Length: 164
Image (cartoon, one colour):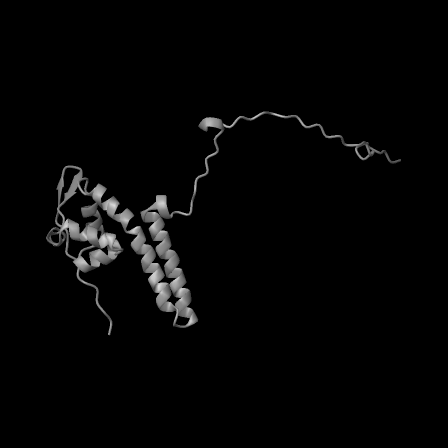
């Protein structure tokens, strides 16, 4: 039997001049900001949280990205990186007793979760490392130009030969 998606609660909007303002759904307010942050820290994606609250993802994002909540939301996302890695590892462990297709799917899912962890906390989990080269005492690297003389013997190949 096919599972139906929850119905979306419409967001009431109003326009004032050129600026569009919106009021967030009462469902999100009733759930509470701290509970949503706990779900983010627990490794749930924003689409999973929105689906559980019966709201659209953009509504949840708008709520989380309000200036008064941005800093706490970003901190929760950084904290959730470890949960994303655990999620991928758990899927890989569960697939060990199954067939090869399940193992391949679990590997792909584990890589996806590792990418999510790197996106959420790039300072700790990113594979991109910047290498900075500095000279003595952290100053610029001292360079010196050099001229190299190469001796090429004259083998007569560069001379033009005239044919009659």
